[in-house]
Length: 400
Image: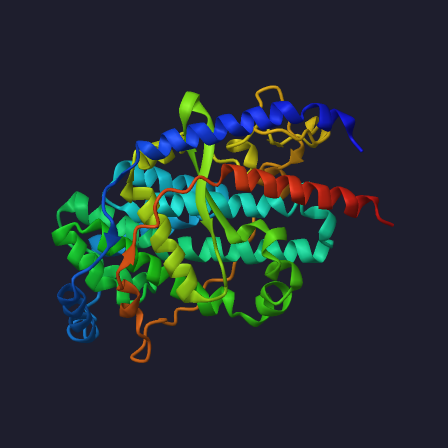
């Protein structure tokens, strides 16, 4: 038994009480910008008709010389930015800062941060004792492939909007040269005119989750090696089912909001979570501003980026676990490496060009109304889970 931890219990309880008071105070200042995410059925039906009508029979006219140059430029930019999770995550944020009307890009940046943290967890001190070298590589490839494929599909869409905005000319007829689903064209055309950020964001959430469903989630290799494994299905022991948004709170303390993903392999659940996270990100003030403030912290893939008192990139600097909450004096007790220190670059096969949207699919049902999930601080819960998992890890290492 660690008597040092027992002696620190009063400090832990004091800091925990202080944390609860700060959260209650924060909650009192919350303003819901909107109570529900709602789209008029008339708008959705109009977009559906356009998709089924003129957009399925769009012109096959060859691109002009200017358009060919634009296509080539976008392909090169995508290749450069799609090297790894670090470059993708930065590209999303840089794009949002230049085009803040594209809400999805900030959402993608924050979710991509989580992807990077999940990748480095595989090499960190909490999960690595449970993983063989082969299993570690398989799980990393699963996360990396999903991250890379979403970027591969989405980034050209963002750059075509950027080019359209700059030239004051609609370039979305070029989406097909990047094998973007026909589903997206009416939404980009609509956004170009009406600038409905909510509608475009939900369309992109729906599109990207469909894009990876067969290419990654249902791929036979990943079903066998990842999603059907006990570790993947044991959510308390595997953190990539959690999506955390750090936010800057009182006295520049970094606290956490977010949610957990149930039934990760189910597309309907991932889309619902995406919509809920979007509402938290853009529908709650001042939480929106405080999450955005955290994005100034450079993304390294290490969880030290948000909690340096708990996590450290340096495995030698990781001290013995100390059981109290958010103390400035505490030393980090979990090794969480920088991504580029533990994972090299991966060359992915070019995704299939097959359009996920067919006459049998019904993605428009995902535009259904959902209520504002509201503010939820998960700092305490998350920290307690870390302590629990850390203890299990310690026991695992002691067992023969």
